[in-house]
View 1 (cartoon, rainbow, N blue to C red):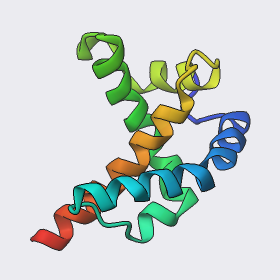
View 2: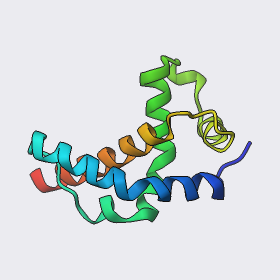
View 3: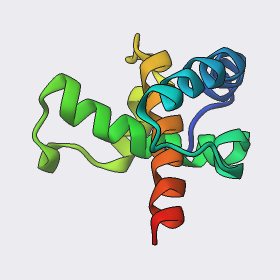
View 4: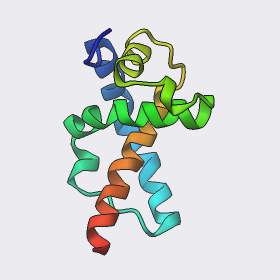
Length: 107
């Protein structure tokens, strides 16, 4: 099984990012707790976070038991376009990065 997200997925995510960043920043205004730090604006960090966001998405939205999901299966799902939800997964990755910044700023 693949261990890296494909170039095709990376290209699609990068296409989605500008609009998603604007959309997610609007959420931050509503919640007041999120901070869009450097990671939020770093495409490389988003790509690093994407498989973890996809893992959480599979568990939360698809209801799959965590022990049935591993990193190679998540990357395979991303690469084989099993996600019609790439937009939602990418949004979750952005929120994840923002929440990491939030935890650092509160410490």
